[in-house]
Amino acid sequence: MTTPATTPDVTVTVIVYNDAARLPRAVASLRAQTHANIEIIISDDHSTDDTPTVARRLEAEDPRVRYLRLPENSGGCSAPRNRAVEIARAPYLMFLDSDDELPPDAVELLLAAHREREVDFTMGAVRRVRVDNGRRTTWMPHLVAEHRTIEGIEADPRLFFEHLSTSKMYARAFLDRHDLRFPEGIHYEDQLFSAQAYCLAKAFTIIPDPVYVWYIDPYAAAASASISNQRHKVTNVRDRVHVQRLIDDFLVESGHAGLREDKDYKFLKHDFRMYAGDLPYRDDEWLAAFADIMNPYLDTLAPGAYTRLPRPERIVLELLRSGRLADVRAAARGLGQEVAPRRVTPDAAGVPYWGDSVPDTDRGRRELAVADLELDTRPFPTAQFRHEITELTRGNGASLTLAIRTYDPGLRLPVGPQRAGLILSPGGRRMTVPFRLDPVSPGVFEGSVRLDLAAAQLPLQGFEGIRHPLVRLNQQGLWNSGVLLAPLDFPAATARVDYRSGATPHEVTVEPEGRNPGRLQLRWRPVGATATVIRPVLRKIARPRVRKAAKLVASVLK
Image (cartoon, rainbow, N blue to C red):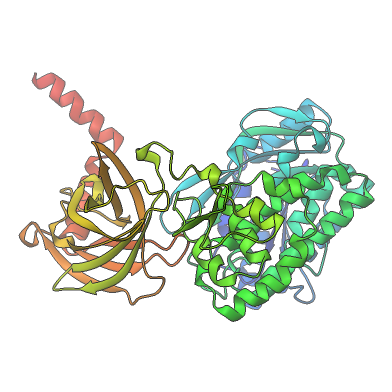
């Protein structure tokens, strides 16, 4: 353990604002690092809760911890980071947010990469953890899949997508040489800082090991949600576009204008895409404000960046740029889910276009042409349809009747009634409810299906989780399954279901998904003995040691 008189190898700054509850967890992850010779600076952006008391206690517990409190709140991440850099004593610097953690060997691994070869910064993988369900994923895994040293961002411009400052260890000399600090007074400061770091670095090393644990709370209250989760605010859109313009200016000033298309593609594929899935849920006033902010910037992007996008995303962008805001909502539903348009219109040459008319501009015809979706030629199992609930009626208990309309713009289904099924798999047990779709016009079918959730077959231990029903079509022995889009807004309803004659009771909630693509969402929650007795016992039995012991006993008794 380092002492104040010892020069630390690495300074890790923890920025915090009104987060007294989670700050100890973040600092504990630093105190547990396998490389102990570190300095820990808690940089408090003038918290008004119990954070100062907690921070001073942590400082008293470990001589490596220093507490820095800003004299007034800055409203962002940059100022507390920059003030900490001013007093940091180590030759290498890292940054941690108070609601996240570092894996135990993060400092050791990144420092070893610095000592292996002199580079301007090192970086590793980011493990994302959903706080609502514990699901773990890796952020941008394809960019950190192998150990490698990059000599200049031009060698791999895809790295613009990995814009987090917290997944990196910087050489202090590199930051000082370029007077590189976090831009103050703006949001999305990481994007500008990281773009500058990538462009200014002569070399940086990537390691595949996890070096940061990023906790994601998609359902956080609006007041406590991260900046990225405040996309419902028009000011959030303005902030994101503003920082992109700053990056563009920097690329030109630093002699990296040749990277503009790569950076623009990143903006369209990542930043704009984050808003696109929310567009069906926005009202007319918000959409108009969004277009007013976004469209002037979209007009400055490199044309090549658009051509690298999947066709459905290009369609949403073009509808927005051409002012077809009502159509934007329909096109944005189902992005990434292989959902077809409701209708396509061919021109005189037979080229199909999204919607009910042929575009009257060259750009519109280029962006809205859907021939590459192969709506009429793809193999039936991968063919694209659009299934929408037009009416939802609740019945007794946990039953509901759905009126479903299916759009077949590629005319893949023959004229006449179609066999269909509604598929649901709670706890891995498939439930299929057959129904019929009748033609109402060319390429449009309608039907009705009654879904009784009390008939679902749950495993003995019950099921806790969310499922979204699928619509399955049959054509000459081939099956096609597609998502079912629900009305965007309807009141959620919860019913108790006494599965197995009351032995495994659950509460089942029917609700709209509330986000892209807006599917019908069904949520199961065990109650009663299922929650208090059966599941805890079976979880205990399922532990590896218990399973191993059970196998050993079974082998002895053979």
